[in-house]
Image 1 (cartoon, helix red, strand yellow):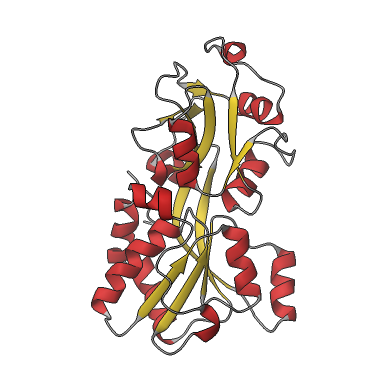
Image 2 (cartoon, helix red, strand yellow):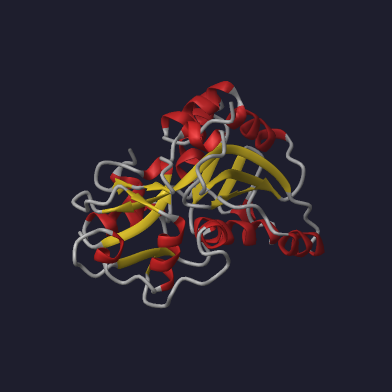
Length: 271
């Protein structure tokens, strides 16, 4: 579902102008690699309609996007988790007043290599694996093979949601292989028959096998009805109430046309 250019080039897309040099007609977007495909696709469509507006987009994780928001070096911060009260306080201390926009919904899907016979996994099993307590696939009904754990790095909003909903605030064990993006997790899991990882729904493709969690398949329906246990909103934040081209772009993202693009990317639209 995700093209290879998002896997190999996701950390830095076309940089037109730096956020610190933002001019009228230029919008800078920074942050979550989960939200990045949404930002890219909607930005491309918006710039076709508004050719005088140039939008620069970079990834790096939700934490990096919110840091740029706090420092007022980006117009929009993409985030796959909610901004924290402490981050809001930091932003206000620097003269910013973050404004939140929910732009889509998503769920985090555990993924394994397509040859793995497992179809379902419980949250308790996931926690045991990521704590390092469950070390072999045979312990949960799989082959007699060591489990290779792929995780996101701590600047990732996806990691923070995983830590909250799966790990219950316990840390992923130090032996996990950390990846900087959803695309990198897909690449790592697809190339290792013994690996397990977790990615946003929009990144699940044929190169990996998505597992149901607690017997519930992650989907549009189970995310919206809140039966899937690892679901979340996806956000864009502005450092101040948006105006001009920034407001017009955000209005476009949540419009019927923008939300259609969200769904085409494999994410879950607001309506």
